Image 1 (tube, rainbow, N blue to C red):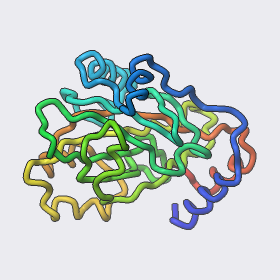
Image 2 (cartoon, rainbow, N blue to C red; image 1 turned 90 degrees about the horizontal axis):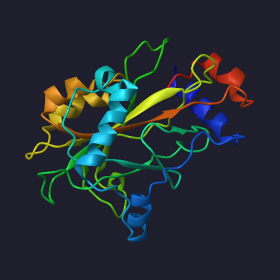
Image 3 (cartoon, rainbow, N blue to C red; image 1 turned 90 degrees about the vertical axis):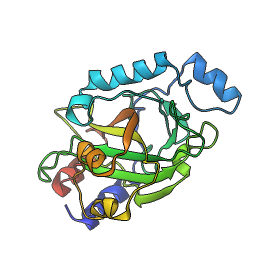
Length: 244
């Protein structure tokens, strides 16, 4: 699929306002209390880490996209100013056109100077691309934060590309998008280790870990689907091959 086709698909999405919400915002008493203190993170405790890891395992993403790992922090995700639970669905026509706000407290055992990498990828991109995972965002040099989004720190290696899944008649849940946070090596990345990211389309987390020595410390995900009844895009995206 060519870039101008992607642009057309996104432009068409901008013209539509979905008639129904795709998911409910995250609503936990803990997060509500912490937000009153201007803290957007869930507490980095064993219960929250285990809960998020279980959600990732239950989704199949640990085996399909990510290796088994020992979580050391917990991710909170916000789209268009609303917080969503791990695994919730969001509407790509209205909520993912701009990068999500990602928050997380410092990883266990990390100091205040520790830097992190944020990666978002779609593991459900079907043919014609025929790739196992499409890289939507790669941002390095993040600082853990529960006040302003951690994702606003650091710098892009691959700029954010919005989710553009097609209207999916066979799978209304849509595509799964993983949000992975890595603890960067203490010495940082060798520039040559990241050069390949500028060229690839498909992204393999295991290969990235092996190449760089980065440590996976947290993972979450969301789903995105364009309702088939949403007018303009129903006949447009299948013809364009919108699959991301």
